[in-house]
Length: 248
Ligand code: MG
Ligand code: MG
Image (cartoon, rainbow, N blue to C red; front, side, top):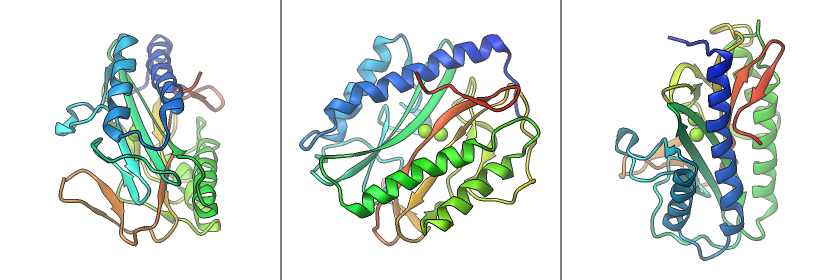
């Protein structure tokens, strides 16, 4: 069921989203060679709790971390652990926070020190693909318009579009209806209406779209070992477009 949020609920969701945004900003200076993903996880959890919120992913289906930390060829759902970041790595950090019963969800990919041109290209165009998708978020458009825009942009830039994992509605649950795929057919799928809140989150690969899951039953990696990037915002559908909730 797709829920329509009231203005009051969207105000609360903006507060939840802002905590997610602030957590990303807080982590940035720590994202340097030598830090472990476990340390990043602890910093994020402490920060989220200091704002009176709880980490949405902690214990979600048994996920052990507070945030997901996915390095280089890891696409999403990387479990924080003892791995130390190295110069030239990229890391996707996916953060969810629940505040007064509502969630915000946003992922971003960061460069550690100096990264190569290929990784820079992947990051630049995955972020741009997110905003190409967001341009389609307005009443009267359909969910398929978002995926179509992302997929076309990715194909034009020769990036692989991960299809097994998708965006989603956000509200009192971090994952609600509808599914928001990063591919699709324009003019198809559920109609976008004012008051809907969705997370749009392209996961694009430098190589092929193929992925597989590690034995830990969480971490998703690219099949060809090439890097992957992930950018996500939670947005509300407004009168004539969208409002980013996981921003300032
Ligand atoms: Mg997320
Ligand atoms: Mg999400």
